[in-house]
Structure formats: structure tokens, C-alpha cells
Image (tube, rainbow, N blue to C red; front, top):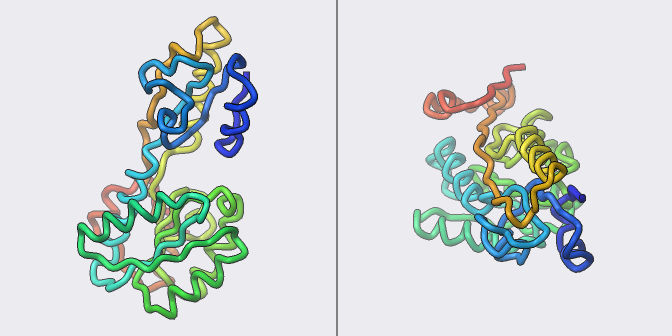
Length: 232
């Protein structure tokens, strides 16, 4: 049995159709060809399906709730995942909001992207998921702090190192759910018979210390919804 990172899934799909694969999180397992359907995958893949694009739009909405008078919201997005920009551009058009596109390939481009956002006088920054830079959250959070931009992230790890706020699945809960799939398969279940599940816990995390440094007041509507508030 294999429990891989998302980046390894295409290679595994090519390599085996028999070894059970438990996916800790993939955006569209049916569209990517890992499952015939979410309810009955039918092959050797099962695990968790993340509502990736829906969460991206929700993060944009929450950021705009925080900075409602921002004329422009900058979006730093991974060039390897162009559908993220497509769905955000559509959502912004529907809401009549202006976005600034900041595509990057790796974390080394983050500082220049943040500088571009500040130069354009963006009122907020949305940082989307990126396999190339998620392991190094400080390299994005630090230039964001330097240019004093209110920023929304997709993982708690960014807020824990000084980011302002994040909204995303609880990673501990995701891995626990993946472990439950492993247990069921070891006890005889076939991965093709185990429905893909979606995470039930989506956390809003707010760093009040960072808000104070930005001289930014967090609306009560956001604070009341927060699953964790970091105060120091």
C-alpha cells in the first residue's frame, strides 16, 4: 500500500493499477482519472477529495470581508496550477472586484511578486496553494510583512510563522482520515469500493499579533468564526 504526496499521483497512476493507493488529498480524483466516481472509485485509488477551487474562492471572499475598501486584491498563484487563476478571475468578475495576477514558479520569486503587489497599491494579497513553496512559508510571510500587506493563506503553517490569516482543511484531521482508509484496506476492504471523502473540518486561523502590527482591526464577524486566534 502507498500513501503518497499529491505530486506523486500521476507517476503512481502510470506505474500500477493493483497496489492500493490512499490519497491524503487531491482536488478532482474523477477528472484526474484516479476514480470512476467519488462514490465508487473502482480502481486502486481512494482517499480524500479536497474542494480545492471552491476553497480558493471562499478565501477571496473572506479576505475581501477583512479589507472591504481595497480597490485591488493581488493573487500570488502557482503557475503549475493555472485553473486557480481562472476560477478566481471568474469569481472576481462576477463580484466586480479587481484582481492583480502574480504567477510564480517557485518560492524564490515570492519577494518580487510581493513587491509588485505593493507597487500596484494592492489592498490585500491572496496566496494560493503551491507545491513548490508551501514547505517554506517564512519565505513568503517575511516579504509580505515587510511590505505590510494584509494576506490570506491556505494553510495554518503560514499563520503560525506570522501570516495574518488562513482558511483551509485541518491537516491533522486529513492524515487521521487517511490512516482510517489504510486500516480498512489492511482489514480486507478493496480501495475501489471505498468512497472518496471530503474533509469535514475547515479552519479559519487569525493572528492578532500580526493584525496589530498592520494596525488592522479584525471584524467581529471574522473573529466569531475563527477556529484559532493567535495572540502572541
